[in-house]
Length: 188
Image (cartoon, rainbow, N blue to C red; front, side, top):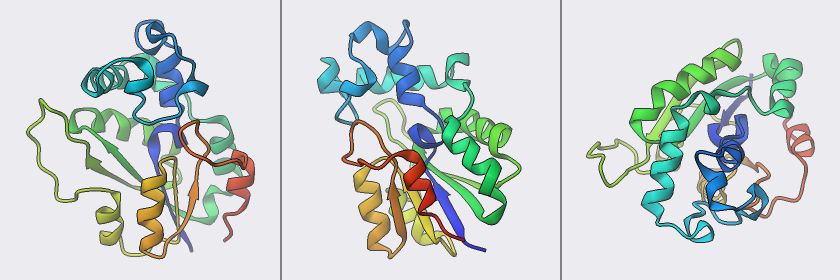
C-alpha cells in the first residue's frame, strides 16, 4: 500500500481563506484570499510578520477555524482514502498542534494513521525542534510515496528526497491544475 503525506493547513482545510474572510481577523486588512500571492502575506497586508502570525495563531484556536475540510479533498478521501496509508505533516506552533490533531482525527480519523508536526518558531516561543523543517521529518518517516503541500519550498525539499510531490493550488504558488486534476494523479 502506498503512503501519502499530506500538509494540513490550506490543503486538508481552508485555513488561510477562512482567516481572510473572518471579520475579526483577516477581513480587517481588506485583502481577498486571491490577493495573497505570498505566504506569509504580511507585506501584502501591510503588517509585520509577527502581527500576521499572531493573528493566524489566535484564529487557529477559534471555533471559526474548525470548519469542515476542503470539500474536494474530503470527497477524494471518501472515494479513495482506503487505498492508501495517510500521514499528516504540518508546520505550526506547538500551542496550536493539539487542536489541529483533534481536527484531523475528527474528520479524517478513519484514514489517517499518523500526525506529525514541525514546530513553527515564534518570537515569544522558546520551544526547540528535533527537525528544522518538513524535509527533516520526511527523512525520518520510513516509506513515503507521495507528498502534497501548498508551499513550493516544501515541495522542492520533498523532491530532493525523491518523493513524488504535488503542489496543492493556492494564490501563493504557481499551480495551475485544479484540485481534482492534482488528486487524479495519485495512483495506487
